[in-house]
Length: 257
Image (cartoon, rainbow, N blue to C red; front, side, top):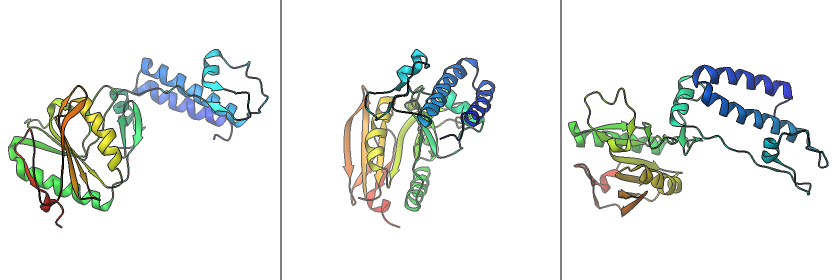
């Protein structure tokens, strides 16, 4: 909570100037209104009294700031979703960190820290993919791609169609991709449900989830109408074949260090 309303207002004014310069007037207006509402609500929460009258709030703020008959207060805040364009402009301006966040369905999400096992497996798979595909595809480790107007995830590995310019002037899109891979340590449920559905909706043709804990590879392919039509789980001792690129993986090798 801000120490005072004045200090919160000063921070807001500074952030508003940054938005005007880097994002533009139109996007700035909607975001600024949301920030104004949040600051006003934070002020009222800090000074709230159960019997306090809210007649001085505007109608729009009354919709956001609800005071029930009971002593328990409920706050509803209208969320402002960011587009990929706005998200990247904020990153370029230094408002967002270079690593550790991704845009999912319009919301900026903190990514889980990369552990030692996770990092080792991503490095191992990265080298394997480069050796296997040669000049037939490009391998992008932990690279962002545009899944939709409001979603820019950063999968651990992306196998994309070969281009001689290495996509220097274009962000990767689902139509450019042969395969996406997520390596899961503590994030298996998220990767195997939320990310799976997100990638299917984006039209990513094939998706693998490497489960470090159970030593399995969950594969999904043939995305139609926002969901994958086929799936298979590979255990140790099995041979995994990619569906849309010449790629074969012996799962025993995957778990051998």
